[in-house]
Amino acid sequence: MTATDELLGGTLIYLPPEAGDVDLPRFEPDNSWLTQASPAEQQAAMWRWMATHFEDPNTATPHDNQGHFDFLGDGPYLADEVIIERFEDIVPDAVIRDFIAKVQAEVGNEWAMKRLDKFSG
Image (cartoon, rainbow, N blue to C red; front, top):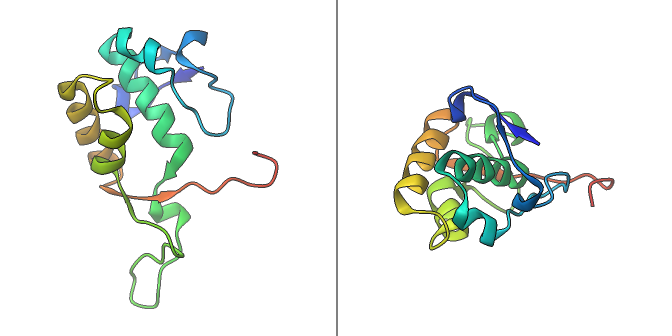
């Protein structure tokens, strides 16, 4: 599975099978692999995790009549909190902080939980 976009500098980064099952609706990287991966691979895995768990509220969340997001009972999920919670003590702090800055620049800090359809598991 590849991860590529502005978040990763437009480069193709292939996650090896040891990284975890990238075909699952919600990717969970293997922590043992993640600790040994390069910073670019770590960020690609974090992006895959983020993109399969959360989504941009601008495209996924209804707005109330005042233009605020209606997170429908859950959220917003703050990128700086959920990323640190998931990857702290696994990925070096500098790699996490750099990734958070990229995520925030791309979408912002508020994210919506990605809803899975009945076919996704």
